[in-house]
Image (cartoon, rainbow, N blue to C red; front, side):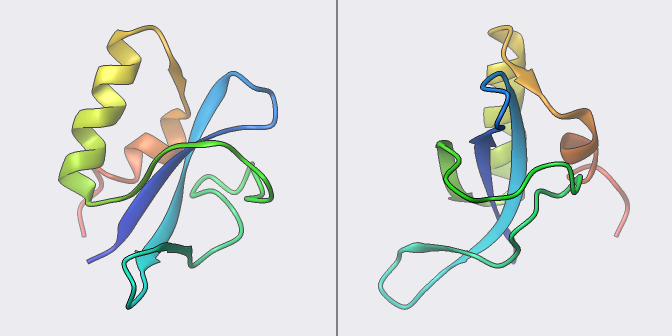
Length: 83
């Protein structure tokens, strides 16, 4: 199951989703160096939540959006597309 991390973009305002996975020690490891929307590189981004399941990330992204945080719509829509 893919894991998602929610990280602040370089603009300091918009949050983007990055794919990752848990390693054997339970640490979150990035699996891609670009955000799902391909607009951000995952260099030294500050991540609010790391390696959450899609259902958990859906809840967390909705909570942040309801708190007036900006979340990339392209990244969020990837959690709702049909597989």
